[in-house]
Image 1 (tube, rainbow, N blue to C red):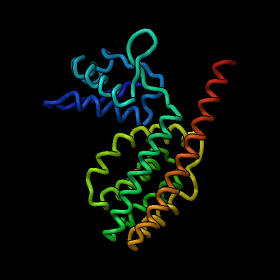
Image 2 (image 1 turned 90 degrees about the vertical axis):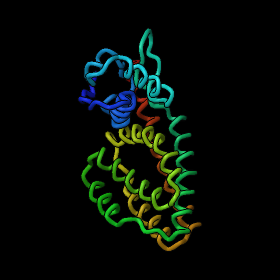
Image 3 (image 1 turned 135 degrees about the horizontal axis):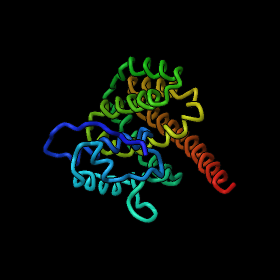
Image 4 (image 1 turned 45 degrees about the vertical axis):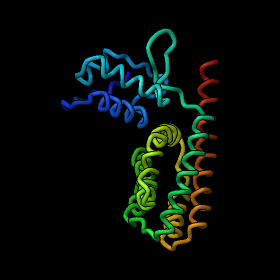
Length: 228
């Protein structure tokens, strides 16, 4: 098992620290689907007692990132196409609300976000591409002026980062993704709320269709290989 061994600082709430470290490890792919999570190993790696680890694992189970393993213990959940499609539905609604509010304010998205996104798109650095994509959408959430949007979508982005990482390791990001981002940003800056909503809905829908299709292919390939 890959052990996300990071020494934690002394703080009142070790549960939150353990939860955050494990969530990052799962969403970024260093703890992959099916990985068993041993409480003793994790506690030793984080230099904490088993109690905060146990509580953190319970929270991760509630949020859909770990599940009961065959026999005993827990493991990182398998990626599920239907679940990811539902997450994209939620993201599509929240992104649409965010761009509408941002456009009504005539907000400007920092052009450096676009430049950085186009730069990393050429690098094939999967985690950098995911972070750049997330930075663009976070900029929209901030531009909306409603902090509840970012708070509501944050957990869902961890699920999306998992599938994006898994898929982009073996296939390329859509070539048009940053052109789509640019068009959305321009519509927001121009105050064209309806146009911005349409563009972001098309953008999220296309991402959902392509990523879930590729994920389904990966899962089918793994299942075929296991049966061979």
